[in-house]
Image (cartoon, rainbow, N blue to C red; front, side, top):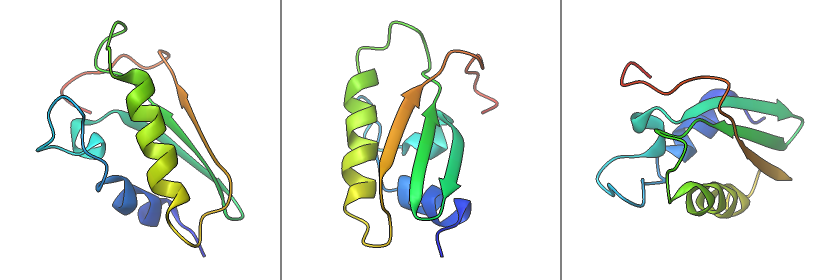
Length: 88
């Protein structure tokens, strides 16, 4: 069974393309994980609206989660509803 903790652990393997020593989870941009059966929807909140790596990070999440055998359909959205801060 897929859990949020499992997906978060997998996403720790996805590194920020601009700071490859830190994962997107540790950076705090993964602000939502919704699971429906084996389908996963991830919400990302970028560090700033003009981030040039937004599409790259979305694609990296999809590519990585698609490589995980237990995961079905993967979708990713970027949201600006939450303002990113270093507290995330």
